[in-house]
Length: 192
Picture 1 (cartoon, rainbow, N blue to C red):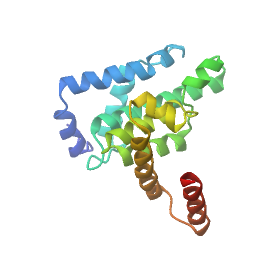
Picture 2: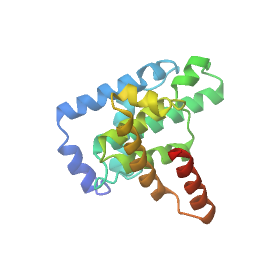
Picture 3: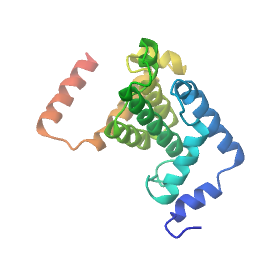
Picture 4: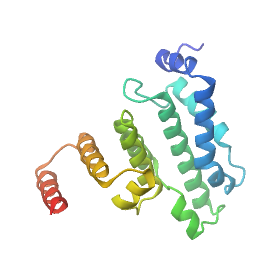
């Protein structure tokens, strides 16, 4: 192996079972297969997964394995690559964007992709929060009740999960006086 390869990533990849790899591939095809078919000459989800692995090995992308499963990192990297591809071809005028496509495609620039990855990394150890965040990313207009119904949880579980999510998200943004007072106002409004 090349000396610049991250030993942790190499070890995690070596321990990735064939069944786990197949689940990752299936998830990527379900999430991004149709979207990529709409882009002329676009790579397949399998190609992007291969690129994601190469990026991790070369150190161009990072995966904090102490906090996040390798599978989640790979999916997040592919999600970012798909967003960049779609945005690039949309700007070039190659892809005609329909209203339906706008509702189903997450268009993100590099900063948005990094933020998404950070959020998913923060919730990676909580399967329910991961599902909620992924659902929300795929359905940005969805309200709490719709998310709860889609995930098959009751509203109390949803509220508890939202509290946990809010606490974790605070670690992404350093508190300021105005943020602190706005958060208290939002908490008061949410409980009334």
